[in-house]
Image 1: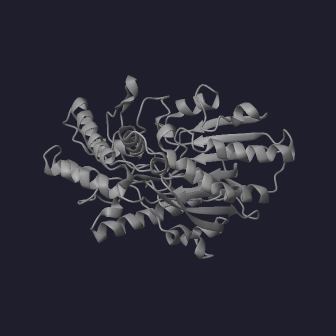
Image 2: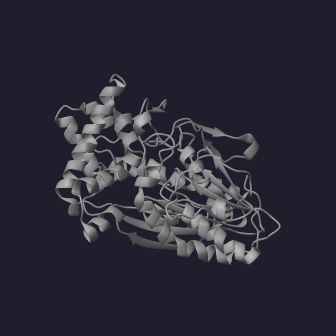
Image 3: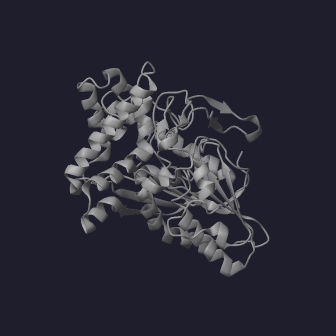
Length: 431
């Protein structure tokens, strides 16, 4: 399993992290013209309620009621894949470790080989990786085994773009399409949160995630002085976020241990940002909006991103003690690497220059793809949709103006920790 998080977290059943909003009660719809009719609060990936599922044993799962973030743009617009360009490069950096894992697996050609992309968004960034995996399996095993790919994300994900891309109605980034180019490959989507069991026991042979695991299941507390925990000056807040992130990470791993077949793999990673700290910049600009009266102080306090950037040590922690629940569930950390991925948009500007306004628009669209809903969620329910939209357009336009004035100053780099996790072949079903 492979995982990713902001400092991105990976395992040989992969996970990806993203950033989300705070308020509950999502009821959003999408407008024509590619703009979001935000229409409701955001929230953590799951709700704060917990349940014990008697049929699945004693492991606590989170009730999945409110999404951790809502995609920006119209359904089928492929906005995320067209603008979250750094995630393609992060996944490209993970490919050597992923292919080492695939090469080490003993695959039974008479059985279905199940691949899962956890936190897949609209599926674009991982498609070239899955093409490479399937392209490796086919020469070795021929048209067997049957291969099944599951894309997991929230129920509000842009699955329309995913399936339009898979069926050739939208272009892929490298013009290759594994569903069209290989026989006996099948795809499906799962709209169940990765804070619940998404798939049957021992179903997954290879799980992957990139840039999703940083989303927390819930907000442990509000952030009084910042939008993101990593730029808050309150140590108590940071401690509560760290505690919640540790609990969530263990839960994610235990749920994936159920889903992984013996000898199955899971992978993922974590990220951080570059020159002008994006998290600090977004937070300080939102605070400036409050000071200028564009939003209220209460709205600033209510704008919280419930995500956490785990350190490499925090990523490894569940695997250190042989008596830990994760180790007892049969999971072992095979390998971990940390890599730096430059900002693709910034690198292109440094290399080619060009139109500063177009560059700034693309840079800010990259941020919009994952951050818009968080800021929308902090705005008062007493505001009209038109007023909320106007505030957000003004907010991102100001950021765009700053980037256009000094393009070389702004970058969003990734520092990624790639984890390769394997389930012991002797491990029994996890209850």
